[in-house]
Image (cartoon, rainbow, N blue to C red; front, side):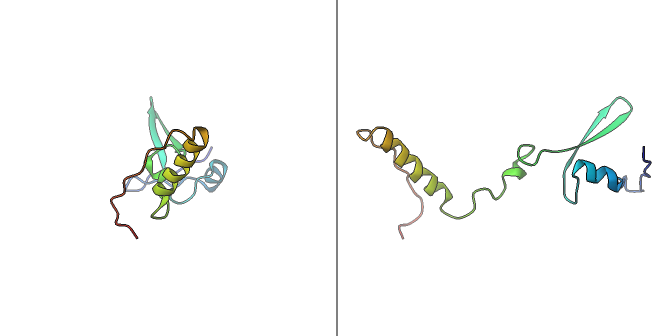
Length: 94
């Protein structure tokens, strides 16, 4: 078991072996939880812990329009007699 010192700002440095074993690197968010007299630090799951995990997932200006177009084609392929809903765009025509 390793021992750490709390700085005047309340910071601690996790030992390198602990960081390596848990995959903790610079910028990783940790959840802090009190369990009685014990402090537990748990790495957050990048994909689902917060909205930050979704940041940048829809890169490009036309990501939503492309998704709607793909969905429209799927709906029309399932039932050609039923027209798919149309996307209203607030952007001007190009």
